[in-house]
Image (cartoon, rainbow, N blue to C red; front, side):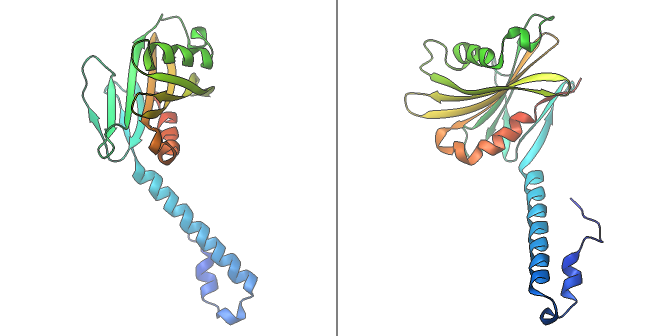
Length: 203
């Protein structure tokens, strides 16, 4: 992120002896310098913290955290990434077939679709998992409707938290989800929100 050379109030003030500069002017300049520093640090962190992924056919793309690696799975999600350090922290994309002429709203509201996924995918009968749909809402992006979903998942030995987004396109239902242990949820929830919101259909 760059700023025009004319926006450098710190250099201008520094050329004047401190004793001759009113304290309010000095304070304003220091505040401007601090804000500029925070903005630059924030931009660097955002750029350094995420990598981009695009499908070979260019149909979809998303961001994933730096330090995560892709793993190959058989008879499972189309794409899976996991954290190298916290290996049970995962990112996955499942692509399912739906009736070609149906859009997402015809499958139900955000809550209805979220509950269907909860019962059939996240915690089906006999799975040993008990999931709760915490939040569900609809958003529009690039002319398409997405449902953003949040779940808590209870297992026998631990609890987990999951964010997901679903979208329908040309007879395919895309379910993109990020999951972590409940103990780490507060540390990664903002990052996960950015990652989940980054999923886009491009063609």
